Image (cartoon, rainbow, N blue to C red; front, side, top):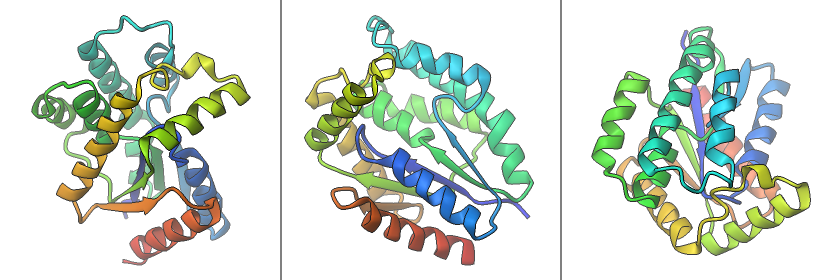
Length: 213
């Protein structure tokens, strides 16, 4: 039986990584086979692409080149990690997927969303998540959190998107909300401006219902 595919989306500083890790521990504790992965990255080749995409030294990276690099990372990720795990009946938790490309490269960078969707259909062969959890938070709040985290943890090697201005991150957030509005069957919006415990409780309820169906 095919596993379930759950993706997490949100702007920088929304708390995705914390919440997806907590959910992995919760599911594993219930004896449910689960894989936690991320984009860009998730494979050795994808991690090399990730370094290019997130390195703040690469300010000259063209938006179209950026888009194609995300597609390349996703193709490798699907082949090596996501499809095999789903085929084995495992729950796949993925920190960002196709919706992130629409939000960041489409709404954020201004590339045509129709072209992005066409490329993604080629890369994914139509594979869609069973559930997408959008952790929503004000763009200014999220960006402040992300920049503070990078300073505290020395994550400057992956700060290229955090270096974008507030207008960019506002467009990304607005894009996510529009995507969620257009696909209400798949998307669930979770308020990210609360304690991690309250956010996690909502997410567990959503995933428990998905797995019970």
